[in-house]
View 1 (cartoon, one colour):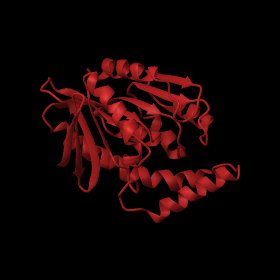
View 2 (spheres, rainbow, N blue to C red):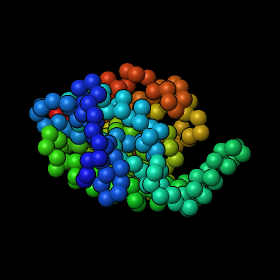
View 3 (cartoon, rainbow, N blue to C red):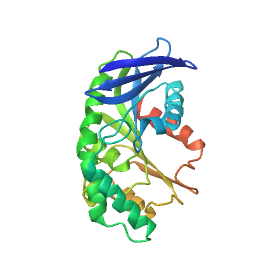
View 4 (cartoon, helix red, strand yellow):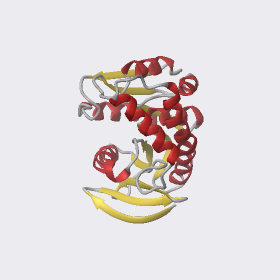
Amino acid sequence: MRFTSGQHLDGVLEREFTLDGVPGILWTAGSASAPAPLILLGHPGGLRRMYPRLAARARHSVTEGFAAATIELPWAGDRPRSGAAEEARAALHNALRAGEPVTGEIVDRLVLPLLDQAVPEWQSALDALLSLPGITGPAGYSGGVISIGVRLAAADPRIAAALLFAGSYVPRAVFEEARQVTIPLLVLLQWDDEGNDRQMALDLFGALGSTEKTLHANLGGHTGVPQFEADDATRFFARHLK
């Protein structure tokens, strides 16, 4: 891990880094304090585009006693593109524009290769971040893509709790992986999320194997998550990471 820049923002230290060519951002308390549990911030790709929302989530987490970090997804931002991923994304958008069903074949082409590359990268980031002074385990995962969160929770025992953002298409194979997830979960679903399959999100929630899982469904579109959910998320992670 190589840090490339750093700045203080209202008592929060924000540092950009690269890890094996993957860019990321780490947010920690700006002053010396006890080691903080780590929350990984998931997102749909494009760190620069997502930065305002990610930074707001991260600063809230740090002020509540956590460290927060994120990395860029494969084929997003400044990372090299994938022709196959672009074709699958175009097929998805074409189906949505035509009012046609999004087939499982399209979802598999779009999401499964992403999982195969992104989840090991998140695990490598977790290796590096947990080795830094001032950061401790256990770790949590917060955000989307929901399939990434599910596979990471199923595959890595260092993830002790997860807040999953519903609102992305899920391959059938991930439903099987969901049955292996046993950690505490909080799932956020925007009921009127345009362009996404509400029933698929509900079915995935049912498939998750955790005995402690909670679904918060709120009216509104994809970016309309109520502010009070941030406070609920803080209480959720405080119960399971501290």
